[in-house]
Amino acid sequence: MPSLIPLGDLRREYDSIHTKIDEAIERVLQRGWFVLGEELEAFEAEWADYCGVAHAVGVGNGTNALQLALQAAGIGRGDEVVVPALTAAFTALAVSSTGATPVFADIDLARYTLDPAALEAAITPYTAAVIPVHLYGCPADMEPIVEIARRHDLLVLEDAAQAHGARYRGVRAGGLGDAATFSFYPSKNLGAYGDAGAILTDDAALAEKIRMLRHGGQRQTYQHELLGTNSRLDEIQAAILRAKLAYLDAWNERRQTLAARYDAGLDDAGDLALPIAPDDVEHVYHLYVVRTPLRGTLRDYLSGAGVNTGIHYPQAVHLQAAYAHLGYEKGSCPNAEQAAAEVLSLPIFPQLSGHEIAQVVRLVRFFFAMR
Ligand SMILES: *Cc1c(COP(=O)(O)O)cnc(C)c1O
Image (cartoon, rainbow, N blue to C red):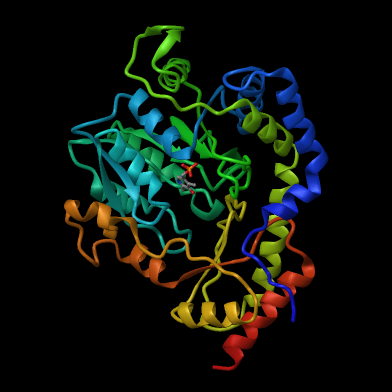
């Protein structure tokens, strides 16, 4: 019985770096200071530097990061924020949590990110911001998106939760708009061992406001100047992230190597669309997502053969029950809906072995050869 090939495996990751992680946690425990301390300050500086952006503010998770960035920019009730119809629903839920209304725009089916023409068509007098999402690790087509946003005076907030280290025309994700958010959820390309997130921006005043909002709206203790919340990136997670940041580039390179193996092995496998990385991006393959009308049967076949796969995402966000009140109909974002029906995420993570990926390639090829 061959062993299971997982979609991701954080236990293998920990095994590969456990002395560094244990040291980081031990350092915090020995210091006895757990919230808003020197690990967070150091991580914020290191993460901002890595991304080539002036300021990073650590918060509790990626959803809070989006919410606080919007709130700090003054976006809320009465405003509309354009988001792609295919993303983690949290992108849109963060908009809703500010009181603003998400407006769903269709994606481009080649890169699975916001279609600039759909953005332009979605703009109304109430539109205040756009959130391009660098889905699966592929940067959205930022040049036309930013150009449209500038013409309509919209804030550009990148959701870079799946794109740590990715580049668009040489510029790292996180530095492509007015502000950007990251999630460090454990399975992301840079993940904590718990929840964590951050906002990046070159705007010092915006960063300062977010710093206050994450900590009760305080600038000084017990002086609550803003209606803030509690959303902080704790010292243990910050120390873990600092330790793991040292591996991010090597891990992304390994993901790219694995993706190239899938590309080569599956190129002519059958009715299967492989991910396309445009020439001007560096894709970091948070996920390796293929698309086929035979998604369900392929998934069952792989599962039966011991290969775990995922679906990101099985429902476009505009059709989620939570957004029924907005009245979107089936067919309103056809590309996102087609993707939701056809996408399949194959195993990809830095510790996936050459033997394992060869096995997945063999099985997928066999599945199509038998039809
Ligand atoms: C993971 C993710 C989020 C949410 O991040 P959390 O840290 O889980 O709150 C938001 N947007 C995208 C695109 C994500 O992948």
